[in-house]
Length: 605
Image 1 (cartoon, helix red, strand yellow):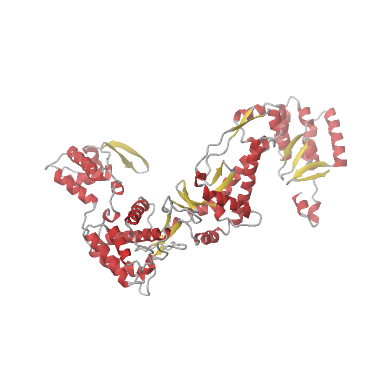
Image 2: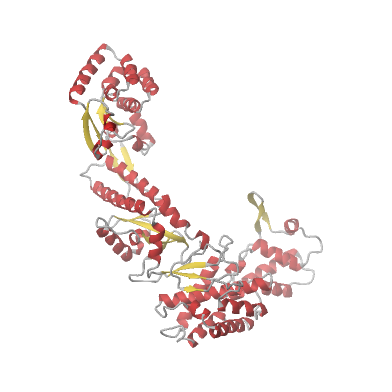
């Protein structure tokens, strides 16, 4: 009978390097790829899930799988050694994860305070999230207020003083697009003409093709309905009457056919905003400027250009804050490149910000690219409303600080970087850390070959515990159930667990109940004791008189004589069993141990 021994393929935390057979456990810190997308109040969601059950459950599940495979393999099989090595490693991780469960927050904060390739920043939005907590930030804006409630940040105050008076020198892309469409459209344009010009202008201005043939109409509480983009459907959905203007239809079509268009346009975020009012524009430009400064600061720290916190320097200098904000406002009012102007500002004040060299064109391009991609990422959905703090992953880092990676949309580190070392585990986890830094591809899923063993049902039944039966293929279980020996195991299991009615039903339905009663087998009771005996011997040992009487009613004279001999032997020599790896042999279950001081082994018994 062929039984496949499949390795799990849906691990979230466990990864195995098949070249060395070394097990790695990845600790997820936060959602994101190169920037965190779960910030502020959600920042510890992944860590809590890992340390408060997720990792333990996955390790225990894999441990059970390995134990199942090992129960079927012979020790001389090469696969046995491979799986045994993995099981030993899993047990190491289980011990470590359990020991860290109540103290992981302190350990994680201590770990984050050390140099790495994961950098954090903390900004100051108008409405702050009180849950924002950042360990060892690279860039910060003063978030405190004085006794009158006035913000203490000079930079923040200056932005909120100057930005409300600002008129952008470049129109937002939506306004620009609508104006261009209206210039092209003829008077009294038809719906189809409006749709055609809108599509062609999106392609011409933004190099983006929009679907103007169909859309998904939302239905409250249900799945949306696909409908054609025609005048009748748009009128019904928008409630338009006959006097709806071309601009009305353009606005409706943009919302229906291109709701995410503005996030896809390759343009500086400083000129992509669509604002409700002056306060909205001021806050948005303030957060964009802070975010860009944070990205620039992280870049300089990662490249070894400066180890200073630029936010602290700006908040400590009225002159620098004034100059920077006026320069940003001037660039915005003239429709110029804000990012380049900020880089030029830092080069002019290289000494104040302790730059080891001026930022060049390559630096500026890298900073701008990081700013645009990460800002779009963190503002892409309404699920991330807070702009208080962020983490940035330097995916190009190398050397001893290269300890964070991205995997399955999560920023992670190898557990060996966090697990406290002990004399027993320090050698093993040092090897794991070394391998994790040399082989970043260990997190790439590896399809391991499926091992198949050939075993007869009779041999299989003597190897497996109750839990492991559930892991067998259905056809294998059915083949085993057809064997007489299976009835023996069922009877023994029911007797050991006090299921008298079930045991009685098995004997009643058996055509050879005497063989069932006289056949010994291996089984485990509720207390984890493993026996190899007959059902009656166990009931006699356990002093279960009700079970004994039921079994005796099914015995013929020959079986009674057989059992009498075995019980006499048991009274003289005892009944052997194992519990927690220790062997015992006594004639009856004995409760007298509760009356005396126990050793550890006696208590287990």
